[in-house]
Structures are given as structure tokens and as C-alpha cells.
Picture (cartoon, rainbow, N blue to C red):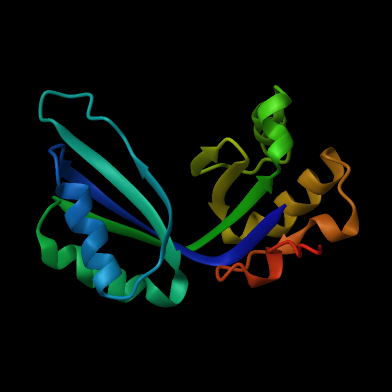
Length: 168
């Protein structure tokens, strides 16, 4: 399990649902040197064909990210939340063990922790939540999954601390 409490969320409201818009947004952020983590976009459900797109960045990059996407003029509005955190359950075994996501969501719900964004892959479930609830989420998930002391780590965006060592 990994966690971090120093993130912020940017939400672009009223984004045109057309090819190339997401590419423009994330190219501009990359060109500005801003690392983006969790990205969620909804499919428009109304006749206006407008979507909302949210992503997380390091809290220190929030102002630059907001300025960068605001200058593009691709959305009707930009909203931010500078007190976001994230907990992630990571493991290759999740592909062969049904119910891991259900357990994560049930445990957090049982603790009264609201999940604001969810991102998954075959080996990772990340939940974005209020920064002030990260430690509660880590404790509850640690207990629920019976993780050892070495299984919980603060997230390392550069990845160096989490890379396995291969000996031959």
C-alpha cells in the first residue's frame, strides 16, 4: 500500500468531448513541467456534449496547473481542491482475487471516508480522498488486509524506493 497527503485536484468543467482536447490539456501541463497523477474524465450524458475532467498534481504545482489549463480556453470553468490525498493498494495478485475493490471501498465507507476519485489498473486501486483522512484510511486498510509493517509506504513519485532489487 502507498499513500500521500500532499496533492491537489484540478477539475475542468464543461470540456468539449472531441478528439484532441485531452491531448492539448496534458501536453500543455507536460510542457509546463507539471507531473499529473490520477486522471478521471466522464462521458457527457446531456445533449450539450460537455464533459468534466479531473486530475491530481502535487500541491506545490496547483497554481501553475490552474494557470496552464485556464489559458487553453478549453473548458467553461476550473475548480480546485488543495487538500487532497491518495491511498493505493498495489499487488499483482489483485487480478486473481475477486473482491479486492469491494473490500477497499467497504472499509473506507465503514470508516466514514468519502472517496472522491477512483482509479484502477490490473494491479492497483487508488482512492483520492480528503488529505486529513489519509492516515485513517491507511490504518483501516492496513488492518483490513492484514498488512505487515513493510507493506505500507509513503508514495515516492520518482519510484526509486519501490523498485525491486534483482540479484542474479
